[in-house]
Amino acid sequence: MSHYPRAKFLISADAPTGFGDDSGAEVAFAGRSNSGKSSAINAIVQRRDLARTSKTPGRTQLVNFFELEPGRRIVDLPGYGYAQVPPAMRAHWGRLMEAYFAVRESLAGLFIIVDSRRGFAESDNVMLEFAAARGRPVHVLLSKADKLGRNEAREALKKTRALLMDRATAQLFSAVTGAEVDAARGSLDAMLARRPLRPADSGAG
Image (cartoon, rainbow, N blue to C red; front, side, top):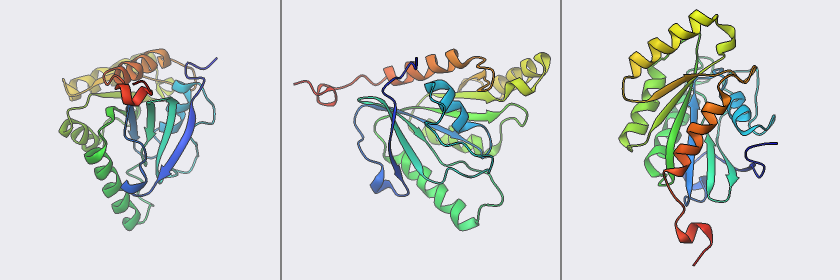
């Protein structure tokens, strides 16, 4: 049974005016195209098709909101860094994400999905800076860890943590084998718990 049995899609937005309800708490998921972001979301939520997955990089072109339970959401941000996306579209995505981080009061934290075989990139660092500007915690998932040997995976994690220092936490992750999915889910729950529901958000009072 899913840890979030009431999880459901809420809305997609291609402009800040479409972001929807800003009460409660939400955690955003970001990552380069083909980093395994949608697969990570589905594995953590234990729903095979909650976030759309595709073998075509750059498929996520909108800001997608999902409700885990009333007042608790995750947000699938557009993938970035895919060269074959037209420059105008890349620029639009950049503005959309910049606006998202600037206006969302309910933002409780950020997950950055990084292909463990490719490592951290400058585009990932931009996401770190967006979150830091809002004082929000960041957790990095080194995805597709099943494609590395044990020593390679250990070294990738060590290198990433040294690079991040105290700017973010990091872990290995595999949506295929389920390795460390529970740890990722725990980090998500901890971020969501940082912003307790106000009485107006919970429907009380």
